[in-house]
Image 1 (cartoon, helix red, strand yellow):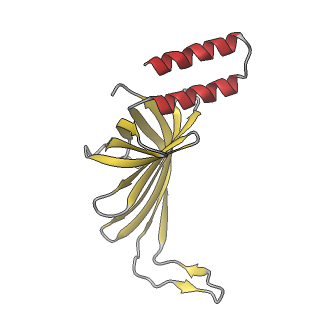
Image 2 (cartoon, rainbow, N blue to C red):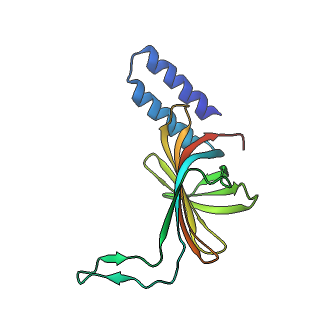
Image 3 (cartoon, rainbow, N blue to C red):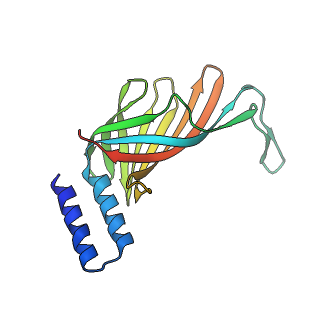
Length: 176
C-alpha cells in the first residue's frame, strides 16, 4: 500500500512540475507491477492452432527447410470461451531474477508457478500435468484502461491433437 501511495504522490508532483507524462505512466506501471502481490488477468482475444492429423512424416528440402509439417494445422481466431482469466497470488520475488506465485484459472486448479523478472516484465511458466507449458508475461505498460498489458501462450497436447495458442489481455492488481 505504501508503494502505491508513494507512486501516486510522485505522479501528482510530476504533473505539477511538468515532467513527461509518458515517463510518469511507465514509472507508475513499473511500480504497479513490481509492488503488487496479486494480479487478476483477463484475455480478450487470441489465436490458437491445432494439428488434426498428427503422425504424417516431416518432409525436408535438400537445404534442410521444412516443406510440409507433421500433420495439418487448423487456425482458430477469437477467444477460447473456456479461458476467461488467470489469477496470480502470493507473488514473491526470489534471488536475482526469480519469482514465484500461486496461479489459478477457470478450472479451479491452483498451481505453484516459477517466474522470471526482467526490465519491466514479469513472466510466469507453468508446467502442465499432461505435459506442455503455459507462459504468461505481464508488462510494465498500461493499456487504455490503466491495466497492465499481458500475453498468455499455451503449448499442449489434448488426446491426439497438438495445440498452440496465444492470447493478449490485461492484468490489474487485486487484494491478496
